[in-house]
Length: 541
Image (cartoon, rainbow, N blue to C red):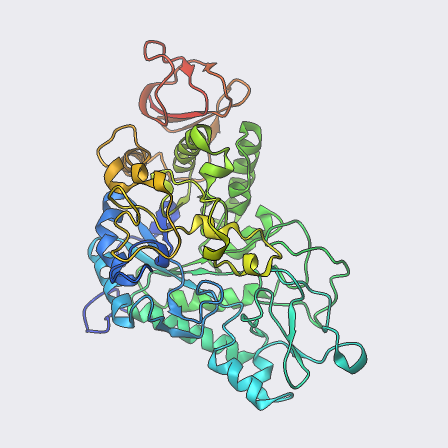
């Protein structure tokens, strides 16, 4: 197997890849940037790659190890860039390939790694393959790279099977010549046929393109969806599809996906610097997720079971145990995540307002104390809530536009984050923002919170500093649970202990050491045996 040099060359011949720390991803803190909502460099109201580049020092100071960039590829933007027309080109709204190269090079200069989003389940209906497939007609080679089928019923007027789209309505759209094509998401997102060797060859080539540019890995969108059951059998029931559930489905989590990821792992292993694959795999159980992380497959998978666990000590402990137990046999690190670009921000999920923020701060310390890798969604370090009152005219989520499927609230977690100033767009850019920002966000900006020891931003900065300084945080694959009152989590890792009170009342329990960090003011500074409501504390000793 060819081993690529540790320092690949960028578009202008400069070295890009960091490639210095084996296994860096096992306990990394990875920050998700949603490009259109992070920073706008040219005043068009839309975030871009140059805006990201200029804000990389902020992420370095925050203390993260890597940056995951949501899609920036050439796209008609029918689904916020998850409908890709060209996997080797940058959409002009975000800049150019030179801008992507500059982001990677500057990130590496700051000792930050870059993970790019890859969307292999489907492309855009404006992808050249799909446009040519439509032109060539039924029975032609390009159509075999997608799922084209004749319809059922009189004159083929009914879809080929009963599958529903995640975004609502049938998962099939009929074209002018009478055939139907499959799209598990929007009609503008035709699914690839991964049984076709040309599809597999193309994506291995795409991987190498970005790895040669210096990318440190890939977040793989809908990683569980690539392979469909032979014959595309009916589901047999008419319920609305969900990304996460305990159903066995003919289009999700099919065993055939694993051979694809084995071939991808071989590509990743050709490159020095520990390049990684991260699966967005919505599976029925942690055990099924672990299958994607066997030693010859991918490196990490998002822990959606943890994300979906409520603010309840008993449920959280069960999910933590289940997650660690599932990953241990395959030797993979568990990941922990509280929010992302597809779900309601956890401040709001945990009740909103003062209570929701207190729980979110405590949840951050719990997450960062657990063994494995943690993901931080842009703005959660500022304590941003979901924006639930966006006007209908501003929303761009395709599910909302159709009035079907998911609740359409994904726009609420994608509102551009505030950097500075008293009025919108709060330093995001000079030309407004593509989604309106709330008036109360002035007090949540990076500038407003910097230096305030009580702010959520400074809590994250200190937690990440301590995580780097204390090897018991992040490393390993187990926790030692301690006896604790009802509603309290308590675990030890080496000389470090984390306690979390998930109840609404103060709880008395013996202090396990000296306070390192607390998510809220302790109820009684003179009595460290009292743990405040909705509070997490890190202890040493």
